[in-house]
Image (tube, rainbow over all chains, first blue to last red; front, side):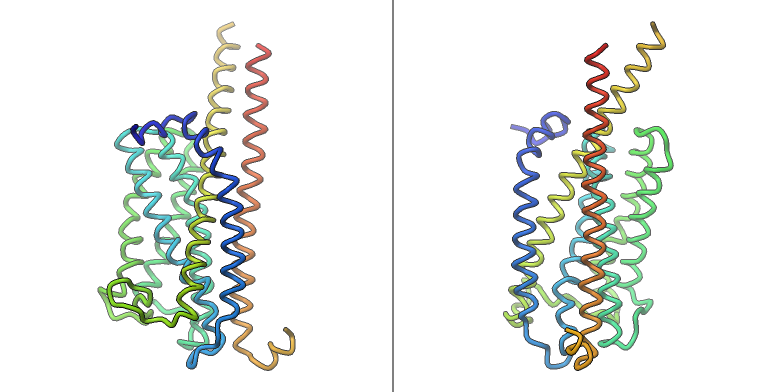
Length: 244
Length: 53
C-alpha cells in the first residue's frame, strides 16, 4: 500500500475526515492539562515567575521551525511529483507556521525584557526567526497574488524551498555563532538539564501544540481541497454554458 | 490577580505572553473554522448547480 494514494484528493478527504474531530478533541484536552500543569511550576531561582513563559515560547518556536520544514517537504513533493494535494497542504500550513512564529517572537520579546533587559536584539537566532516569519508572509502573499492556482503553487513552492535555509538557521544558529539567545535546554544527547518540574509540563505542552498543529493543518488542507473542487466545478459549468 | 500583579511586577510579562498567545491562536482557529464553513458552502452550491444541470 503506497502513501502516494493520499495524493488523490478523494482518498485524502476520506482519511482525514475520520481524523479531524478526534485531533481537535485530543489537542484541546492535552493543551488544557498542559496549561494547568505548567501554571503549577515553581518560580525559577533566577528568573522568578517569568520562567512560566517557557511553556508557550518553546513549543511555539519548535512548531514555527517544524511547520516550515513540513511546508518545504510538501512543496518539494509537489514540485517533483506534481501532486496538487502536496501544494495545498503546504499552503494550509503557512498561516499556522506564521502564527506560531509570531507567538514565539512575541513571547520571546516579553521574556527578553526581564531576563536580557531588552525586547529585541539582532542576534543570529532572533534575526533568522524574523526572516523566516517574513518568508511565511511572503509565501502567503505570493499565493494570493497569482490568479492561476497552478502557477501560484509552483512559484510559492520555489519560494518556500529558498526559505528553508532560514528554518535551518533558526534551529542551528545557536551552534554556529555566539548568540545572546541560549542554546537548546531540552536535548536528548546531553542528558537532563532541566528540572522535572519544568521539563514534564514542557513536553506535555509540546505534544499539545503538535496535536493542535495537526488538527489545524488537516482542517485547512480539507478547506483548500474543497475550494479547489468548487472552482473546478464552476469553471466546468462556465465552459458548458459557453459551448451551449 | 490584580493584587499579585502589584506584588510581583514580573507577572505582567507572563500574563502578556499568555494572553497574547491565546489571542493569536484564537484568531487562527476562528479564521480556519470560518474558511472551512465557507468552503463547504461553496462546494455544496457548486455541486447542486452541477446536479440541476
